[in-house]
Length: 74
Image (cartoon, rainbow, N blue to C red; front, top):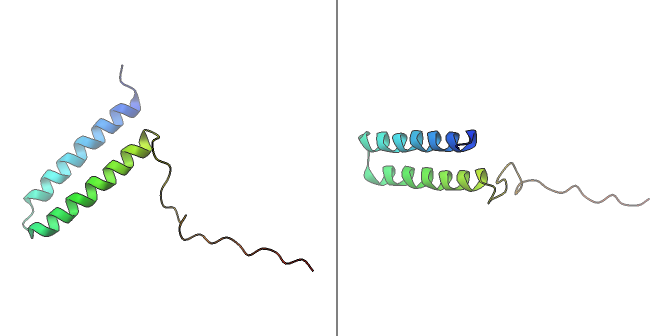
């Protein structure tokens, strides 16, 4: 009924929810808490999209990778 991937996703979401709850208990400025929440939620959405194959890999230097210069014929 439940595949290991689905169970892993559910457990991960529970852990992230607990983490977000614990961040709310830390005494710090509300703006910083909100920024942390937004960053975590965006990261989770991207991770979920990648997990279910709706989004390809992001990062890994794709934007920074330079193509080698073309060889000049001699």
